[in-house]
Image (tube, rainbow, N blue to C red; front, side, top):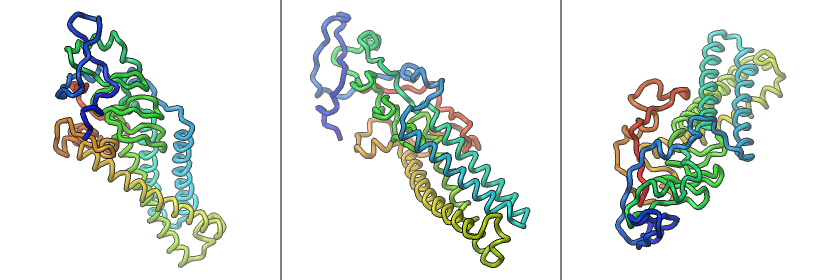
Length: 313
């Protein structure tokens, strides 16, 4: 739990009713208050435009992610399925793998190019603060790094150089923060990557068993040494990403159900927001009511237009 002194850093004080005159200096040890603010007020203008973070490390990681999926696609199709004599096996597994891979890449693209919930940059001006009509003694959080008024549960990202609403963490693999607006797409990305990793591992096992019983020259269009190397690399990639994305998927679902972001858990921040049921928290992220659209990266969750945020004052 933060001490009262710690909670009063980087704040702007409400001015007296005399207007834009001298600010009223108040003690930080007063009881906490909140001002409800409409979401439209703190929504960045870039929310409806293309969002892309120009970070070299993040771009490289995002490209590597796509290349690894494409490598798995190549091995699955040209090493295992196309040379197979069982047409039904090839069609069923090829269709399933391609659908999952397509959804994984689409989820990755949406997570990367969706505004995670950036607070308008540079809105902590004298005129804007006065427009909030703060009462004497009230204060609002001001981020000294991006000069924005921070709503409750917002944190500054040093990579995005913005304050992000309900920021969970910055993920270099999607070259973006995971926040309020794109958490659904990040969860879907981890889920679909875990599924295609598991599917690829199962196909590798079946392919090895089939080739051991048959001639290796007949079970692949590549030479036996090349086939073994390609399958071992795919097996290593699938196992690594299955473990990693499964852990991330479980962590994200737990974070959603408890309505506590990764940063809030790490910092052990005091809970100052209303507690809701796990189902309500899931619907807040994936949209409501429950439908197949929860699993679609092309569906934007309906989080409600009447949502308001609190500026801690």
